[in-house]
Length: 277
Image 1: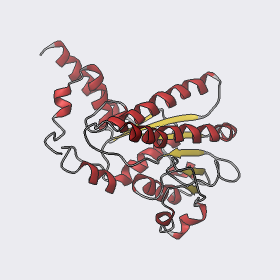
Image 2: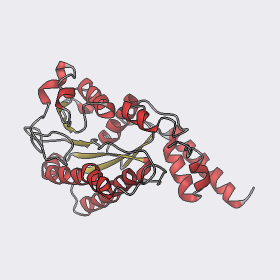
Image 3: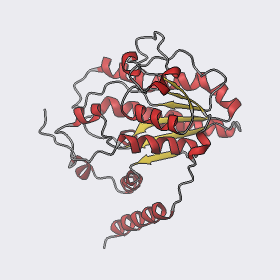
Image 4: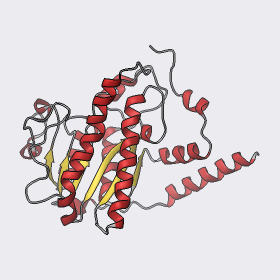
């Protein structure tokens, strides 16, 4: 076996063993009474997170750009809805930067509609998507930080493997996710250096079986989708245990480390259908 092959096998074995022996320290009871502001809560992963948080007894403020969809959520979730008019570039509704009485978790999950296609030169769309997927995250985190510092709270940022490994059909989307990784990873260092007890958890997700993701990738990828409910639980668990990064599904961590050691464009591209328009 060639040296690089030995390295890849050893790395894969090590990651597998760590995953096997790792004990999940998440205790759902720790979220009872926790004050949570969750963005992008009207559908998909955000909706599933809302259900989990409510089941664990958290006090929720939910935000989304589609008020009508939010109003259809189960009644126990409705008191914490925010629906005040917002700037056009901010693709969700939020009536205040933090819930009344403080904040323990700011979960940034909202996203602008992604065009899963080859780059067509639309710079304005990229600028708009950067506003929604990146700058609004920065703005909300900045507004919430003073309150999170008082509560020793947590920032939970939902990102993607496309923010770690550049993939086809995701030029604009991938740019926004790489930006999230850079900003919030740097912010984490600065908070530590200032001895501010605010955790920053970056959530690296693969393809999830949300309606929008399935619609945009249909016929273009050969990758199995993972359940949104399980992805939501992984995000919540990671934020509650204050880990720096969450990979879901877990094997993405192994994929990422292998990619760092031996990137292969040919292997990566084999998962995508280039004949699709």
